[in-house]
Length: 164
Image 1 (cartoon, rainbow, N blue to C red):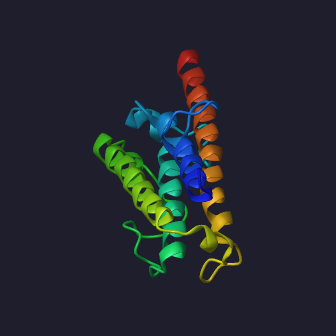
Image 2 (image 1 turned 90 degrees about the vertical axis):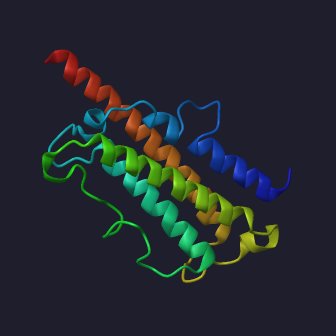
C-alpha cells in the first residue's frame, strides 16, 4: 500500500468506512431525525446539525487549499460555524440537504487527495503553514473528533428525553 493509499484509507475510515474504533462521522449521524440534530444540551452550545455543517466547511477548506480554489465558494454564506435551525424551525429537508452537502464535500475532497503524489505530501499547502500531509491527516482527525462529540450529544439527548 502506498502512502497515498494509506492516507485515503485513513480518510475513509474517519468518514464512512468500517473501522475498529467505533462510529465514524457518517455513522454518527446515520438515522438521526431533524429534532435530534437540532437539539442543544444548553442554549449556547452547538447542536449536531451545526457540527455537520462545520465539518463540511472544513472539508471544503482543505480541498480549497489543495487545489488553489478561491475563497468564498462554499455553498453557504459565512464560514466555520453555521446556525441551524434558523428561527427555531426544525426542517427535515434542510437537515437532509446539509447531510448531502457533507457527503458531497467529502467526496470532492477525497478526489483532490487522490490526485496527489507521494512527493507532494511533504510540500507546504499554498497559503498555509502546514504540509499537505498535515492537512490530510488533520481533516481525518477532525472527522473523528466531531464523531465522538456527536455521540456524546446523542447520549445527552436520549437522557434528556427519558427524564421528561
